[in-house]
Length: 335
Picture 1 (spheres, rainbow, N blue to C red):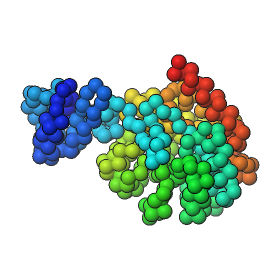
Picture 2: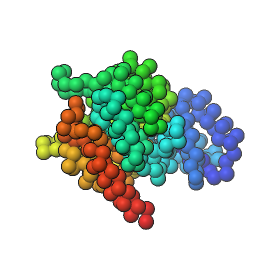
Picture 3: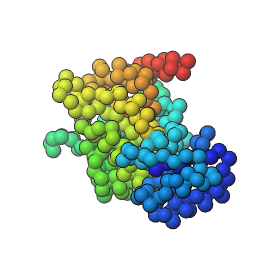
Picture 4: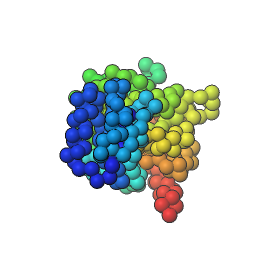
């Protein structure tokens, strides 16, 4: 249920109303936009008398929400959510970010060089995998704790915030200095993990599952937000279809769909979506054109010798060209 408050209502009136809702056993979520204040009610709203609420002096209207996701719903929060990192980097709204770096951390020299190059090309955030979920148990699984340590060295060297994947809640203590915790596609519906990270105070990058609908994806975001953490960033990374030419099928329509349904920022990962480095630049342009809030791109200093996903990784020089081209698209969109 959504309660739209009349323009000019005092803070005290809004506070009294939210306290009344709490007494009724529902949790009010207050969203103050530029033009109106909205109170979203989460919980069993069957006890709430809609006509009584509509009759209150400060209430403009009351609306029922049919979608199962509430806090991630744009109806609850009309204005775009902007996630702000500790260094001031903003994700969402009119901001466009690049998260770039190697699929996996392989050495100190590698990660620092990649960090320096992607920063020089315009990236605001360094991506790199310390823990890697792999289909084969014999494939490189990442450097683990040492990988986190090397990411911190690259952060110290360049000042770039870090995004890296958390696979198991038992490793959460290693992520103290990580700026954004990534939940990968395979864990998008690991609900116990989502509940746990809902209690942390770090931004969460939630990748879409291999074959999940947009509603299922938003419901996973809802798990995190229900725990109190509203700093969620969505990432479209392609879904599995009957097509086998590319690694996955990049669903660019998910970007405007998410903007319509939710206030959460959404970025696109064309590297995992296509699995082919030659297609990454074109898909990056498409993502920018349809309104994505950013891109996550794999960049490796020597892709043919990468321990993980070299076929989809750009060289630093190629990444330079991508940011330059995407910049032209963004400039055209802004008029």
